Length: 151
Image (tube, rainbow, N blue to C red; front, side, top):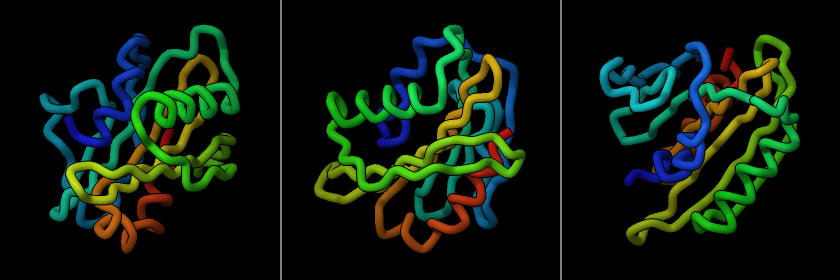
């Protein structure tokens, strides 16, 4: 199971919402719609960095803070991720959110996983990017722009 897929397994417990979208960074290729596997949008770079967007229902109308904390707890307590950074983030459409940046060791390599959480009414938007740390690092600014574009 890939790092990005493992980090979002818990989201499968929630029914999906209407399709949402995000801008894909330059030099990424969109994944065929038949292979989205629960994502609204998914794309990969030639060096294996993945970016994607999931939309899930927010049946209890949880806040951004609630969902960011729930995701952080899940990833750090049971998936072995280390939270490196957390910061407020505003989407390009003006929605307030949180950016969480995690690291993890997998098969002897260091991985970076970036996750932006936005709540839009009854939907939770989870925009994510991840891959080997040395491949993610030069793309960080472009990935943040993509994550912020979730709508």
